Length: 347
Image (tube, rainbow, N blue to C red; front, top):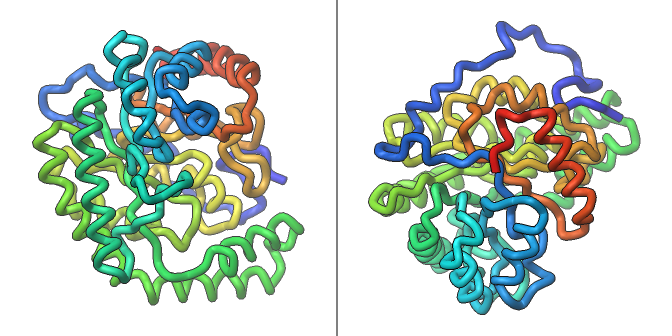
């Protein structure tokens, strides 16, 4: 078991330097200096427990948060109550997570029900249409960013990522069998990648113009599975493609990246050092070794001090927690966070 996000059983790599230069000014949208909030909370925690959006917001505010990310899985029926809470001044919307609200034909919380990378043209178009609709609602709630999942390649995570996770859980990450399985996985993923990366790039290009018109940043999220698009190499390529576009950037999910770190697919802090200049913000949660994420901060293995040094103090950090997490535990963790990281704590 590991106890720190940047120190694991994997071989150490010599680093030229641990502190990346964060050029946040490059990514701050024109005319929005000082607007970015710092600490927020995702509605994914209690969405499923409410039929009324206003009461959902009130429960989050009672935890001690006034900035809220409106997340996927939201039924259309809850939007009027969210509007009412917003008009009351009960919260500010830090950002929105695609798709918001959920497509009416999807009866469960399924943010990947439609993918930009799908081999079905209808599904790719549906994903775009839903994303444009989400951008309009994000503008209504004065959101600063839209978190996007870009898709996946046709590899079943149950066969690939899950197999590696089971071997790591059994302590077999240094065995030749594990190394062979991981290398086979990476080779297959790399072979399949170009077509699905291109589809993701085309979708992002289509969305970027409207996002700029509305003043909303497109935040491309780091995903939990290596089967997802983009992987880290593709993420760097995407960010380089949009290097001169201030409305496209990177969204760092603390737990998702840690899951890949635990499989030896990357080094968490080395990845942050490479991508730091493109960071818009991040989803904060903890990970119980090796792969149980969306836990309350400080209940798992992440080394937040090591991770947070790559984040500018004024970028949004959104607690994205499982619905199973206890409200009292969240309040306690929030108090600890504010004491440890006051520069990342304004609510």
